[in-house]
Amino acid sequence: MWFRYLIPRLRFDMNETVSPEIEELLQHLYAVQAEQAEFHADFAPPELLVQARREGWVEAGTESHRLTPAGFDIGRAVMRRHRLAECLLQDVLVAKPDRLNDAACRFEHLLQHGLDERICGLLGHPRTCPHGRVIPEGECCRRARADSIREVAPLCDGKPGDQGAVAYLATRDNREVQKMMAMGILPGAKIELIQRFPSYVFQVGHSQFAVDRPLAEIIYVHWRKSL
Ligand SMILES: [Zn+2]
Ligand SMILES: [Zn+2]
Image 1 (tube, helix red, strand yellow):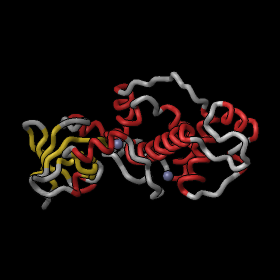
Image 2: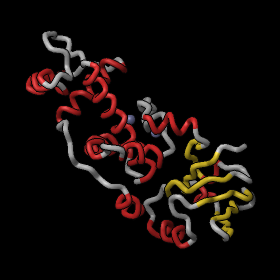
Image 3: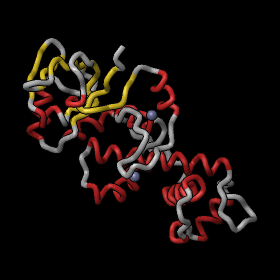
């Protein structure tokens, strides 16, 4: 599978300082506080609230479960990783939509210590998750905006003359992946779209290739901004 090629390049750092249960709690309280989500007691068990207060993440001595600034930052970061994980699962790993939330809940705890920035970069610093909710911005997103990186979009959305680098292949079909890897279409490879009709012609390295629309739809590119 495509992601087997992708994932070993990312290093996981499992030195967690906040337990997944507390992360879920702070994420929920962040949604309540910053996004006017409805409060659900199921997501805020009393024993976890006690623990979060003791750690200084939830205001002590109140019944409102308001986050402290430190707790708010953690909740926001967990929400960011959750929605990035959803994008990753949908766009790169081509997960089924109904499994997105559960899988993202498990995945988000792994995207720590800079890994979220690399996933964010891979996806072209998306602003919303597949459900259309806002992804809290990271430092990498602010840097990318100042840089010349445009959103990630499929090859079929490019104009002749547009240049960029391959971001990922959105397919779970092994034959398609092998076919494209044989052409040198790998993440990071420089790519230029030459023509769109009657087929999509593009250059990778010193070779030119022609593909039909279905293949042009699954090659995702970090387009450089046109000058
Ligand atoms: Zn979502
Ligand atoms: Zn980013």
